Amino acid sequence: MVKLTGGQAFCESLKVQGVQYIFGTPGTTEVPIIDALTEYGELQYILTLHEGTALGMADGYARATKEPGVVSVHTIVGVANTINYLYNSYRDQIPIVLTAGFKDTRLLGRGAFLETPDLPEVVQQLTKWSWLVMRADTISEIMTRACKIATTPPQGPVFVAIPEDLQREVIDVEISPSHKYRIPGRIRPDQAQIEKAGQLLMDSAQPIIIAGNEVSRAEALPELTELAEILSIPVFAEDIMSLCYLTFPNHHPFYQGPFSPANPLVQSAEVVFGVGCRMFMPFRYSPVPPFPPTAKIIHLHIDPQEIARIYPVDVPMVADIKAALKDLLVYIKANLPTEKTQRYKERAEQLSQAKAGLTPKGPPGRTTGEITPQELIITLGEILPEQAILVNEGIMTSLTLPYFLRLKPSQGYYANSGGGLGWGVPAALGIKLAMKDRPVIALVGDGSLIFGIQSLWTAARYQIPIIILVCNNRGYQAIKAALLGYGGKAAEERVFPGCDITGPEIDFPSLSKGFGVAGRSITRLEELRPAFNEALQAQAPYLIDISLTGDIPPLP
Image (cartoon, rainbow, N blue to C red):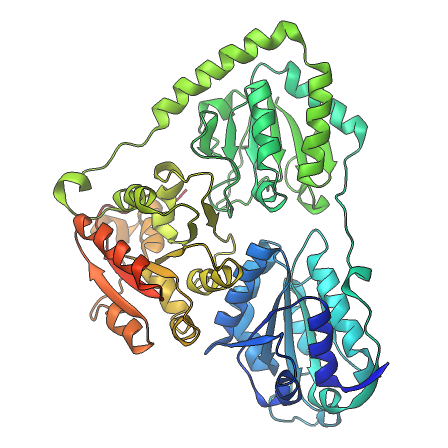
């Protein structure tokens, strides 16, 4: 045992867990922890000017590394400022360790400055575990437990509040190696369920696969691709509203785009195999199931709460996606009926022809020079470097992305399904810290950027070289699309109260320069490539404000 202050115990426990960064907006209730950081060069404190930026950066870092993203904020006011971003992490099961300094325990109940009756309760519904430290000699134990809970599948955020007097207290501390608190290995499925699933897939004349976010998180793309190719099964990505990763190679001839109940292959499906996907995250109510009522449903997911959440399932499998697909491949290869191989071959040819019909064709922007969302996405796919990572919070522009963007196998993709705006730039900064040798591009809406504009200062302060592409349609187009769909007076008169970001328009390049980030605006398609190349060569954070035109697309 060694004698440490509570603040030192906090830092020591994170060091042993392999944490490299603490993202934070400091306050006086964390002073002993901040003081202790002067002794821990292994822990870099990344200063943000808003707690949402801190949480968003930790979220991006955790998505890229699958390790906990650690955040330090200031009591109730700091915690409140993280809620928008914490919700994103909670919905996508991202391992965040959110910590907050709390008032001296001797002040509690006296109505002290920044006191709140129950700080852990504030975030309890958005975390896997929420705790108030009550003894200084448990700080190390609780921080170790927090990292364990956050990273154990199904992963997710946790919260720890630490009173400032306990941070100052000197205690005896014994810290065990981190591997003694982690749970290694992959959960395998029940063999009987593997056999049921395998037989259904081999026997079906019209099976489909829905590839979900957990495919990417489990690094199971090779196994899923092999399964689809052996049985010639069309593959849909998870629903566009919840798709956060590249879940199947979108250049593959069997890839059919995001899941849609209107797709003929879905409407005629005999077997639906949900692989690591949510089934589903509805955007609006529909009394009609998204697939035929006679279809057999197989659902594989690491989180049992996701299975049969809405619709009944014929073959449920709670398991690690990669391990389950490996077991399924073993069974199918050993039992593949030779008399059906011709049917699989014919289905492969039909899928290739159907895929050719899905190939996007350039919209009118190629001749007019104006930049439509479709044209932006097509051109972006042409100019993204090898190994590039695209972080998507383009909102309405994003609706065109799965259909018009063709990512290479070497490129990466991240988005969030929570809907809390402002996530894109902070997440891109966190991803870049985790993957320093890869180009990182944040595609964000103008409305989204304003929610996280303070992150530009952090990008400049630490010279984190990301490229920020602002899809500037000068308004909240999602609300305009909803009003058009509603079909009321606003749609009739084409008047959209509260939806336009004009009068004045925001000068994003000037705003970014004020934060120390270079930027420029473009209005013509031919300006995009030179501007993007200039941003790549800058080797520093760079913003490109892209003026978009085009009709308002319908909501999904």
